[in-house]
Image (cartoon, rainbow, N blue to C red; front, side, top):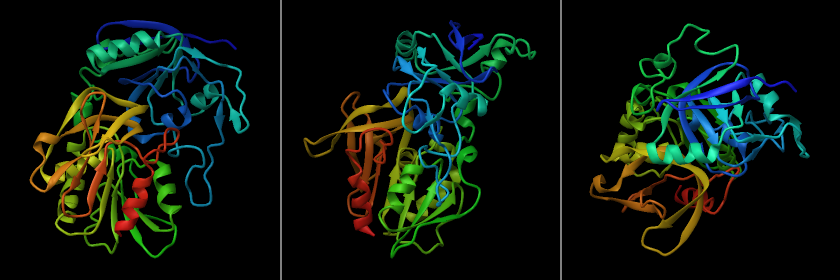
Length: 374
C-alpha cells in the first residue's frame, strides 16, 4: 500500500508530519482529542463531532476494521451513530492496515476514502493531546502531498479558518449553526407503544433512538427548529448535537414554552445546555472539552459515582441556575456541571451520554427513569 506524506497544520503555528491513510485531500476544522480506547466507528459517525478534526489518543487504530454501515428496517444504522462520518479529519498514531474482526467488511482507510475524509497517521498523539490540554482546542488543517491548500490557491490563514468560516468555536464556527447541518429535515416516526415521545433532533445519536424504541414507546423525531409546542405527546427528549447551544435560538424559544407546562423533559449533552438556557441559566466554552469513555461523575447529594461517555465542548454554569433548578451531576475531574434538574417538575438533563455506544452503560437506567415519569 503506497501512502502519501501528509501534514497537520495547527493554529498555534506548529506543523506535524505523518502519512495519509484515508482520503487524499485537504480538510480544515477545530482540532480536538478523544481518550476513548475503542469505538472509532461510533465516534466518527457521532454528529457532535461535526466540523472537527478528531485526534484519537489511543495508539492503535484500524485493527478491527469497520462494520457494515447499512440501516436496519427502522432506517437506523445498525452499528453506527448516524448515516455518515461527521468528523472533518482523523489524526492517529499508528494505523493497522491489516484488520480482523467477525463483523468487519472493510478497512478504516477504505471507509474514509469512500466518504472523502482524510486521515493522517504517524502523529505523536500524546504530545498533541497534551498541547491541546495546555493551549485549548485550536483550528487546524490536514494537507496531503500533491493536494494541499496551497495547491488550491488558499492562504494559510484562510485555510486554518482564521479569516473564513472554519474558525475555532470561540470565533466564527461558534456562531455558525452546526446543529442545522446535522438535524433531520422532516418529521420522522419510529416504533409503537402506549406513550409518545417527541425527540428534538439536534444531531441525535442513533443509539438514543434505539434505547427509546426498545423500551416500547412511539418516538416522533422533529427537526431542531420545529415548533413542537402544539403537538400531542407524553414526554419531550432533547438530543445531543455539535457547537454552541446559544445559536439554537428557535429551539430555546420552543423549549421555554414547554417548560411552562408539566410534561416530562429529558435532555442529553447539548440538550442539557439547551434546557439550561431555556430556564434562564448560562453556558460557557470549555478549554478542551470532555471527549472520552472514562469521565467520572457524582450524583449530587449522594456518594454514588458513575463512569460515563462524553463528547461536548460547552458546559452549563451552575451558579447561574435560577430558582427551582439545581445541579444533578458533577464531574469529579474538574468540578464542572454534568446535569441539571427541576426541584418540582419532571425536568432533568445530563451532560454525559447514558446511551453510550461504544462506552460504559452505567447510566442507561436514566431512560427508565424518564419513561416512568410519562
